[in-house]
Image (cartoon, rainbow, N blue to C red; front, side, top):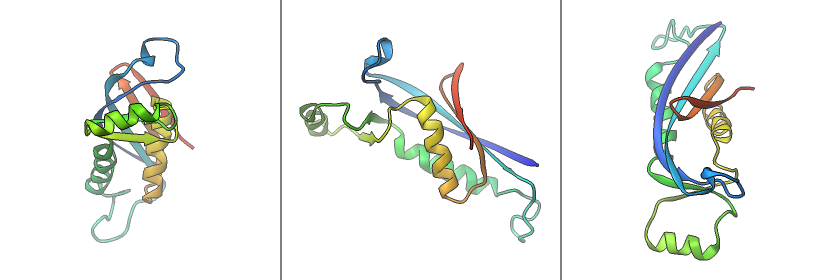
Length: 139
């Protein structure tokens, strides 16, 4: 089995509605996303011969996904009052609504599914919310 890893990062703000602790408050992270691919066979195509996938393509795909979230306020659908959202929009903040609570665990699944949807043979995705704390998802 062959394995490849690449990583990218993004900065964003979030909060955890209903959480009893510091993370209930709006705060930010430099999220580090580490994607690991796996496969038993290497490509025989001319350009990618001897490769699982082209690192350049993989790095570009993960960077694009991270760039979509970079320097934004990510919030769970239904977690903010309409008046709060209206005020934030009026201030022209970059808001991204997610159908899940924005935790490292949920983000690891999110990136896994996005990369798999692009056709990559994803094995595991790790998302670090601090240098020492990460969550991982694999199927």
